[in-house]
Image (tube, rainbow, N blue to C red; front, side, top):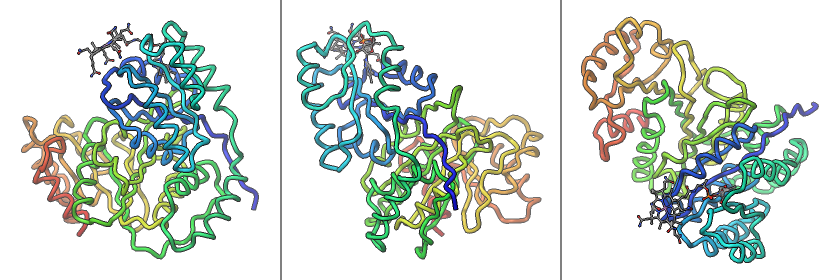
Length: 383
Ligand code: B12
């Protein structure tokens, strides 16, 4: 069967190094890259070389852009470059800047050690975008990627895939409709988490990850997270920046842009769930973009779905219009420390009663450590 493949936008991971909170330059640069069609996975500030390299491999990016102002740029860039090589990912490029804190002499040394480019104070944004496009714009075709993966995958039958292998398979799943995942004989739970933007889905997932890591000392978890593509097909994939516990070696996280698909997920999500489910994970969590009233993103058998809402949905009438209230297995009222949360939970319970499906309503405060509501939700999910 001929492989139908899509051209892949350039994917770049950006971050600010450890002990550095100067994030405003990289936030501006992120938006400029996104505006020009690039998918940017933003990891946030105060990030270790280990976190950055793990994320870059899992996200299968072409390059890492670092913004460093803390004075440790020579050592930090070298550590990232060496870690990439050690992990067999030396093909991921590294570039960056740090205004006047990086001198031309420092930059020369950093480039000798493997950095692709260092940008100095006064460089126009257009120059950086042009560099990223020309340096990282060429890519392997989906066909050759799928062929080489099939070869390496058949050699590794039965063993958990490395982050590197899994990341490439997910890229192939995103690019090619002909990729069929090995049929999973494993008992992987799949959990879909959806809800309107700002309800706290990402924080809640991170708290669930913490409970999972504590409850299953050898368990592995995959997160497939979605953010919307913006003008010109670029996207700012920022869920990782809000994650703490998900920066663990037992967690594999991949950010998907919707690339024009409506409804909260990407065209590749179903294939990506198959790939992740057949890769020895105990739990696969799928997070949608912030959804609207009419969206019902999950339609897979054997998948539990959670709708996360905040108490400020408006009047009782609004509840009648939310389609996902009929489809969800569990409904969460997050931010239940806000005024009106008790009323919200009781209105939602009344709305669900007519479904006669016994859908539980659980009140949580995901931003609070050791929140008993999140403990309750975790038990309900793992039941
Ligand atoms: C704004 C700023 C702050 C803000 C940061 C706000 C924020 N959220 O980002 C605040 C006030 C919070 C702050 C705090 C501190 N700061 Co401060 N800060 C600055 C300042 C004035 C500007 C930096 C900036 O935003 N530049 C704007 C960007 C867009 O331009 P640029 O730097 O020229 O960068 C260009 C290129 O390099 C490129 N680029 C930059 N990054 C990247 C990344 C990629 C991928 C690419 C492609 C390109 C690129 O983009 C620009 C293009 O023209 C600098 C001084 C200066 N003039 O540089 C000090 C400076 C960086 N800070 C400094 C210090 C010491 C601190 C503090 C430690 C002060 C203190 N004692 O509390 C704290 C530390 C805070 C922390 N948690 O890390 C020192 C660092 C000294 C050093 N490393 O040797 C500086 C140099 C001031 C100084 N002269 O002493 N700071």
